[in-house]
Amino acid sequence: MRHFFVFSFVIVLAACAPRAKLIFAPDLVTSLPSRSVFVATTRAIEGSSFGAGRSPAPVYLNYDITIPPERASGDIPFPKAEIDPNRQFIVKGRSLYPTREAFRSRLSGALARNSEGREAIVYIHGFNNTFDEGLLRIAQLTEDFGLIGVPVHYSWPSAANVLGYAYDRDSVLFARDGLDQLITDLRRAGARNVILVAHSVGSQLVMEVLRQRDIETPGSVARDIDGVALISPDIDIDLFRAQARRIASLPDPFGIFVSKRDRALSLSARLTGQRDRLGNASAGEVADLNVTVIDVTNFSTGAGHFTVGDSAVLTSIFRNAGNFEAAFRGDSAGRTGLFQGTVLTVQNATEIILSPVTVLTQ
Image 1 (cartoon, helix red, strand yellow):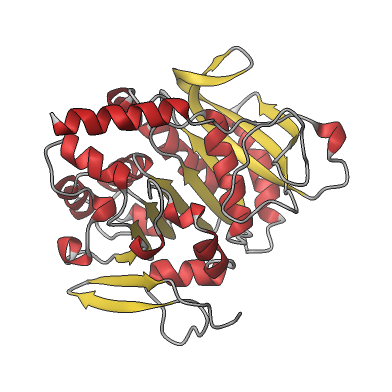
Image 2 (spheres, rainbow, N blue to C red):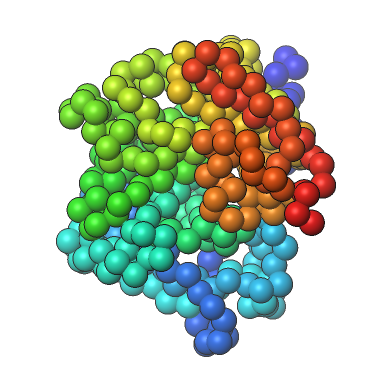
């Protein structure tokens, strides 16, 4: 009965929460800098946007999104009656590619111009996300972390409803081939480095795709994927271990951002009759795997389900690509000013427990 009341309380809160939406206002932002985000989605077109329905074939797009100069770090502003380009992300332009080949051609050009050396950063959203929310999240993460690779978003068909958990878990399985194709397209377009960043249930999608790629071509995952970061992964720990063991060699680095105060994962664990999910585990539970567990519990507030992206303190610490990469490589040694915390080694796994102290470079 207690679980029922907790679940009901979460539903009420979710139903009342506002949702982020794309704002199309190109005439207002002609002078603001923008970033181009490539998108592959297996969502079906519903009206003028993409909804919860499942598309049998991926759709390919590109969005030109402005960078609001006065937005607070970690924040994705909600729509208001009056549009403020200085504080809100604005869509400056959108392109729909008629074929997979056309999408790959435009990707090739963007990668060739990339100062990071043809690096693609692919974001895979989590449970209860709309198309707009996922796209705005990668724009926010790219800006707040100072990432300079080409941003790519894979949007799978979430129901975008707190009661749609079962639908979303099925959609993750439905969307495997689309993400698999996207990784192949990135390599064929000339990406030298492909980094996958997944949140929540999206982490299970990533693991399923890595597993199926390595079954088809053993050793291909280590060659094709140059890094993985799972943020608050909503995966059964035993399932994750089984997926990882089926892969000849995990991508290196392989980071798992966890929080013991992640209320969404605590609820998920109770509803599935488990003690923990991967997103609130410790290194000891994955000790035989070559992974880095980054514990951000000390920074978690509210639901705590996206602490890495929501915390202004953490985003300031991870402000440049070197610091972010160092964290999920487990490489804190010698990086004065990166972060303070406890570093543990448990067999093959490394655990970093971050502490909320003043950044030394400030």
